[in-house]
Length: 193
Image 1 (cartoon, rainbow, N blue to C red):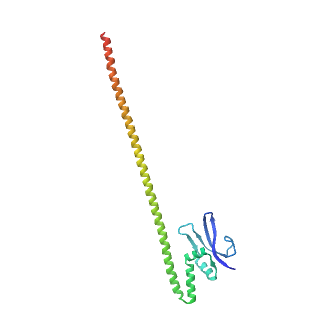
Image 2 (cartoon, rainbow, N blue to C red; image 1 turned 135 degrees about the horizontal axis):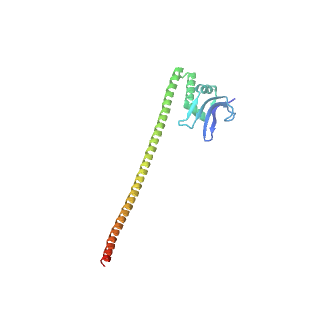
Image 3 (cartoon, helix red, strand yellow; image 1 turned 90 degrees about the vertical axis):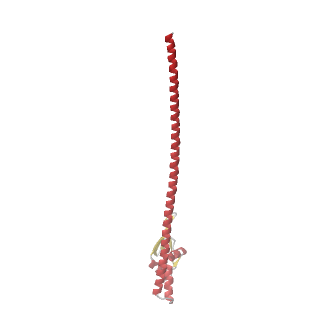
């Protein structure tokens, strides 16, 4: 029975996540499997990979063949590196302590790269957030300046209208004042006659 380590798709449309399974190569993709050894969620950044390291290594040593994507995931988590080092121990290239030392060095280097990526993404996210806030502040300032200008223009128009009304009232009062003495003059003329 040819055994494969592969991905079984789950989740909704356009938002898939995968189970990492050991299955018969003739079984359907999302069908029956022998054992589930982990999960892979590409929707997060960086992708979330949960893997039972020992089970994956055990199945690889038994002869299970990973698919291309599963091989990339196993390599990312260090399972392929550990398998390679254990084969070196079997051949007598170095002892088990040396293999463990090399594996630990590789894992620490890998973890620092992953952590650097996480911190870089967090910093980029913070910078983008600050840039959005600054852009929004500029837009708000421009709006406030426009509203202040509009209010100043309306106030100036209202001031001009008030000044015109005051001037009209003054001119009407002046006309009324000039008309009253003329009426008084005619009344005086009538009394004299």
